[in-house]
Image 1 (cartoon, rainbow, N blue to C red):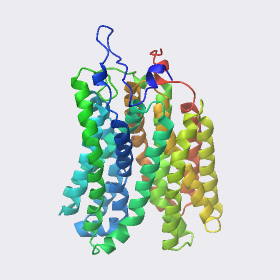
Image 2 (image 1 turned 60 degrees about the vertical axis):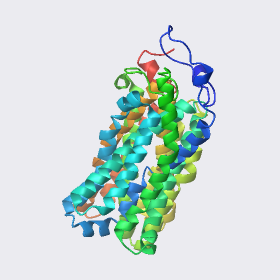
Image 3 (image 1 turned 120 degrees about the vertical axis):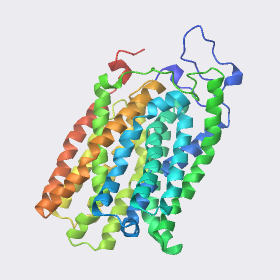
Image 4 (image 1 turned 30 degrees about the vertical axis):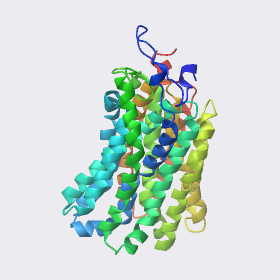
Length: 433
């Protein structure tokens, strides 16, 4: 990594502007308090990137009944997250250039909190869907820009910080899935209260981003247009659509997201249809999800120390293949082993987030690559769970769907190898140093 990209948040940044513009003075240096506050902010933001979805999943039947949703509307709500991630995520680069990534993440946290505050009070499906979309828009922007924040403020600790971010995201996912029902029961049994409680965590996440966003705007007004705390110059960065690595990353992201959504949506039903009790099937899903907490911290650090990360992608894919083959032949006898293996395989997410930070040299490149890979990837992931459901209904069993799940891992492995090669999108677009 070039010298100018290995500065930490507590040292004066190098300005990447035209030669006639002066370097920032020491007074413009990033304040010393920013590093610790950013770490807290990243952790709290990541914790809030999935509870809006998994808390609803835990109370979906009660919510659907309470709002009088039709089956069509209920099915739409389950497909909305990936669609919102794709649609709103694509706006992140432009907003980041205009306001700076820290300010946009702060706004994203506000949007998440506002949506979570409003939706429990909705009296109909339309209002509930609109409030959910507001939260999902904030999640989409934060999804794209947190890797950018890490690359910009912690360029010499990308693996460690992405690991912390990924681990916090996995913890928030598991916490909301496991705790929503008990919290709802403890607070009186209303699904509205059970959903509202997660707005408290979102409001807490806004607090550290307020001073960070303020410092970002102050640095921008001081003239440091490409300072780590300010927005990237308009039009800067490579054209990612010209990069084969960017396309490999986007497709890899899409296939791993497809596998994750299929697992979260259908794994308990697979076990139940095989004869496992409903309560045990829920615990097995929890095991699969909890595996992401420790591995989400380990994998990014390991990947950042390697020049080529293809071996990790292959290993994760093989774990998934074994898990699906096991589900096909012995779903009950090896249930715990298959849940464990699929949990490991789903850790392709922290790997691909790390690759986004490693496959671009500049913060501008990371902004564009993150938006492109995630938006394209989430679009790719939308049909997967619906197709699995259709195959299950058509065939009356899980043989054909499981064969498709295993089959999708083969191109995922190939794309992971391509995305893991030691190259950057700037080099592929003719912008190398």
